[in-house]
Length: 416
Image (tube, rainbow, N blue to C red; front, side):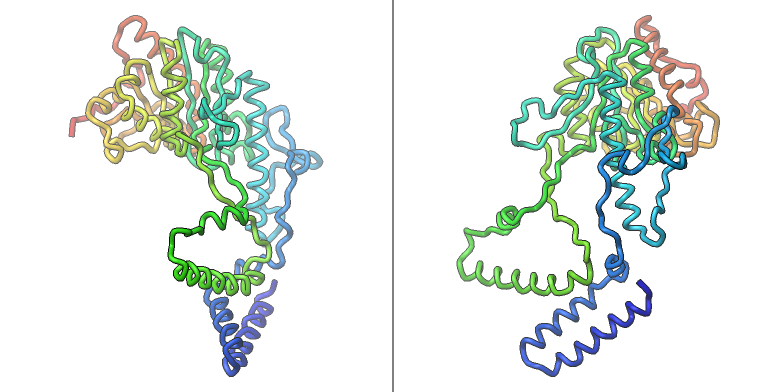
């Protein structure tokens, strides 16, 4: 849509307003609606009139993409990587297309967890009724019965779900760097039980029906006069909104409501719930955590809420570019001391892998993940993390205080 055409539309509206101002009450009401339109109109939104329908395939095949033998997403016909700007000058439409593909990727990774990694899907809450919102996690068959080792994986915030580190990596690079599958496969090979958390699955979205709208605005305990006045205002507001809606948003998307999952309404709640109902009940003598980005914050919150249990059961924690903050989260001195001895944070850095990196906070040692890209830190640090866990397990079994070589030159934190 050209700028001159948009200008013509706005000019027409102004002329109509001038004409309507000379009329009666009905015309004045329309003038008010037109003023409301002009005050709210968004030229970017107006461009949606030329936007193709927001209707996308629901399979990889429908998008004409597939993962090759290297785990790279490629176009079936051209062999080219994914192209974001499928349609020029339609960023919103391209973004919606990207998000639709991302939802398919999420389901695809879920399938891989079950088929390739042989994990089982477990519904949350454990006592959920048929009608209430539900989430789920994945775990190996021996997750609760393995007497030796258990590995728990927690991803970061955003659109990622169980089994993923970064959607962008899965789409633009490959499955190995973007998913937790390499961790899961190696853990199983080395005799670990595995639990994969799903901390971003906090609610389900359902379309807002007329009944729900009516329910949300019901005020049956209000006086009749007040209720009538409120209904009148709502009707007038709706009339004005409908008047400009066809200009502002020709592709009106469905309105939805969020129904939160009981005891799993946030990443922090989810981590605590899975700890209480699964991890704490496991038979493993050594429990290890790998937590990326916001997952590190969720782990610290878990430790604050379940300090004694975590200290008793967890052998070591590997954080990857964690965003936790022991001060803001008000972690006590005993927690900070435990983290200094049992945690290590692989952070984005230009330094070689495992090089010590300074920190202003007195929590856990920080070493380079061997990459400056936040989303790649988990993938790049994988071999070092498994070595870290192996050393921690050996140290615990031999009753020797943990002191891996990479910590030899770490900063000696002063108590603040």
